[in-house]
Image (cartoon, rainbow, N blue to C red; front, side, top):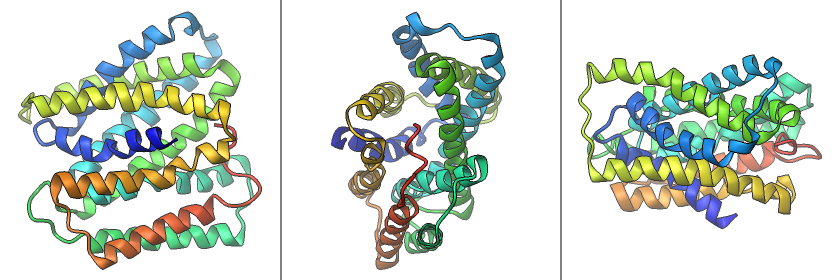
Length: 287
């Protein structure tokens, strides 16, 4: 669990490094150009899907890979790495809301309080991050909005994938929706490259490789292993540790200035996350 929290927690600051020389849609495409062949190879014996699964898998790829990850890249580009790290930790909060809508799961008074605290914390994080000393460390309103759009997209992806994988198996659903997402984002990346310079540096290659291999492929496999050996509720607690690693790495790599408002916002978001996920049943259980 600590290893997974570290791997996923470092994803936002490492994405920030890659986006220094590569624009967002191109960066997302390159990441999945690394991840998809590797995952296809690992899932090569489990790739068969019935015809009725195809529309859902296509929709899942567009929702999770294209919308979720492209929005995240734009969000990371427009926020400091520390703000991006804490905003990415709101995914379980949106999962609670979406599960209440999709499955009719009741939301308790305590959970509503947690959601309210978390969103107030998001506002404090955005305000308390400061203007930043340069383009790599500043936070903009569009950047915060893109990060929240990404969180909604990825939360929707988790909810939807829980249903599809229960019916058709995780490996084939994951492999094919990754491929769909890559095929969808490639034309967008091609369009983007006609208007934005792309510089492939050693740092960018390292960031793409890390995100493609460690976060997307190894991270997913490790997550599945955790779900087999510990209760889902316990495995899901890695969400609490990810921003800790992400913020620490961001302060080290980019010198992010973390003020009192930012610290108060982080506490509120994490406390709100804990309250929103509390109760007898959580959305994490079927995943």
